[in-house]
Image (cartoon, rainbow, N blue to C red; front, side):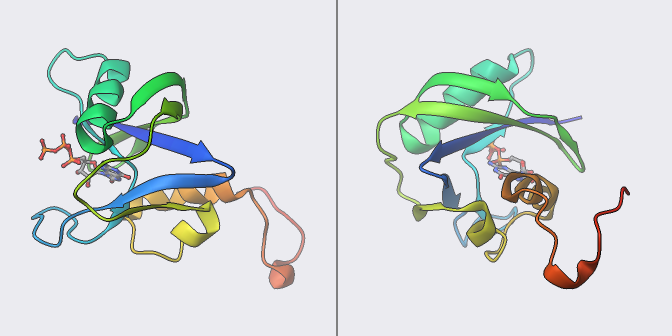
Length: 131
Ligand SMILES: Nc1nc2c([nH]c(=O)n2[C@@H]2O[C@H](COP(=O)(O)OP(=O)(O)OP(=O)(O)O)[C@@H](O)[C@H]2O)c(=O)[nH]1
């Protein structure tokens, strides 16, 4: 299974996203968290540090793991406190989780984004029920 480290860099309730190049063979044009595949034998935290540095030139100061998501690959999201300002040739921006759900994102990210928004059900959905 391919292990992928994702950086959820949050500032004032907004998360850093970048947009995959339209020319990318995998998920072209989608908005995603900085991150990428761990190399063979590379600890996830190291992959997280490396990808954040390589992709947006930011330094991880602290990272807290969230539960992994299983799909075609295994996503390991981390809440990240990072130093610096994003520097990347890709489009990027700061978005609330609710805003991100209205962008084109990798399908595997949707449950994660919903959990970030908080389980606020639509007004007409009735009382909360366990699933
Ligand atoms: N970076 C990133 N990858 C994600 C997210 N959500 C998600 O499903 N993925 C998947 O995780 C994998 C990460 O691949 P990547 O291509 O970014 O990894 P990488 O930087 O190591 O790239 P490389 O294979 O070109 O060296 C892809 O299959 C991608 O579709 C996300 O929010 N951010």
